[in-house]
Amino acid sequence: MAGLANAFVTGSAQEGHHFDYAVENAPRLDALVDLFLRSQPSDDVVHSMAVSMGAYVGELIVRNGGGSWTHVPEGDAPGVRLTSGLVCFPLNKVAKRITIGPTHSIAQFVGVAMAGVLPPGAQPVKPPRGG
Image (tube, rainbow, N blue to C red; front, side, top):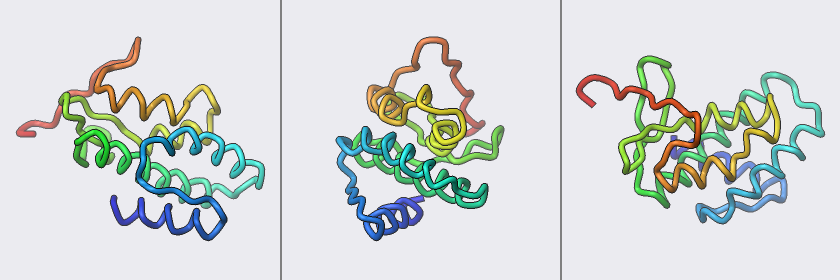
């Protein structure tokens, strides 16, 4: 996932949007999604952006919050296991931000993940057996 995150950083820089792995970059991601959507990207481009930006969001959390990447078999999805033991899904969050809209704030997601708590109404995912 770190490689995909680095691809996002490199690709964004080529487009004039410079990101590093400081958590302060999280609010800029929501604005970048809005700018991205103005170009009316194809479904393939949306998917590619969701994966690479999602990897970047996950790496922000891992590098700044001490979590680690994990695979959750129930959803066949990559997630970030937080130091609290909770698992969050940055690729899914970015996909929702792109397809549903601003109610799925990436900046808020990063803040909640960094705090290591569930937002109101959220249901915890059971960890995989043995993990």
